[in-house]
Image (cartoon, rainbow, N blue to C red):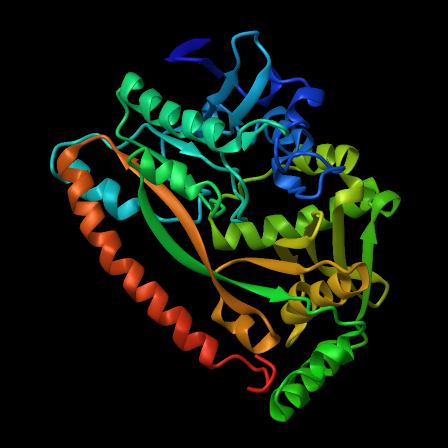
Length: 394
C-alpha cells in the first residue's frame, strides 16, 4: 500500500474493492441497498464481480488503485473507486483527442488515473463518504488525495466521470477542470400508469408512441420482464449471446465476459431486471437494467433478429413501464441518443472532472472545455424545446 500524508487523515492506495470488507464498504454513500441513495454500480457486489471475472485487471488495462481514507484510529471514513489505465476504452467520456495531441507534442498520456465505474455511463458519487461523517471535509481530502497521487505516480492526468453535483466543488477546488455532456433521462412525475404519462404528451406524439409500441410486437413478439430467481443460468446464456453479438459490432471486442454475468446473477439478482423479447418460443432480444433506490439504470441491449421498433420497446418503453410500476423516480437510459427524446426522455447535463499535470496541456484543455460547455448547454436547451410534452405540462 502507498500512504499519502493528509494531515488528520491517512490515505492509502489499495488494489481493488477486495481491500474493503463488505460491511465497511456498505457504510459509504450510495453503496448499500438499505440506504436511500443506493446506486447498484457502487455496490461491493458489482465492483467485485468486475474484478473477480477479470473484466477489470491489469491485462485489460484497468489496474485497481482504490483510495482508502481512514481517521487516526484506522476507521474507514471515505473511498474512491479508481484505476490506473493504459487506454481510454470503456469510459464514455472521450479524451482520445487529448491523448493524441499530447503524444504528438512529445508527451506521454498513458498511463492515467480514472476514478469511475468501469464500462458504466451512470452518474453517482465518486468521492464516497462514510455515513455520519463531515462530507465536505472527507470529499476535500479525497479529491486532493487523487491529485496528489497523480503527481506522486508521475502520470499525465486523473479523470473522474459521471460525477454527481455534490462532488463537483471538491474536485474543482482541488484543481480539476470541469467538463459537461448530456444524456437522456425519463422522469416519473408520480404517474399511476403508462397512459397517465401518455396523457402529458402532445396529441401527435402520443399517437406515434402508441403506434410504435403496437408495431414493435406485430410479428408475434411478446415481452417478459425477469428479475430475482427468474434469472437462471439458461437465461444468462441467452442474454450473453445477445450482448456478444451487439458488443462485437459496436466496440469490436465486448468489455464483459460470461463469468461477470454469472457473478452478478449470484450477487445482485434482486437489483437486476432483464427485458426479454420472445418470438416463436425463443428469446430473440433483451436488455439489462439495474435497480437503484429511486431509479432504473438501462445498460446493454442485444438481439439475434431485427424487428422494426423492437429496440425502442425493449430498451425505453418497458423501462418506463417498470419505473411507473415500482414508483421509481428516474430512468437513466445510458449514453447519448437523441432518438430517446421522442420517447419521453429529456436531456440532462452530466459532469466529469479532469486534472492534467502538464501546465501546457491543462491550459489548452481548459480553453477547449470553456467553449465545449457553451455548446453542450446550448444544445441541451434546444433539445428541451423539442420535447414531446404538451407545453402546458413542461
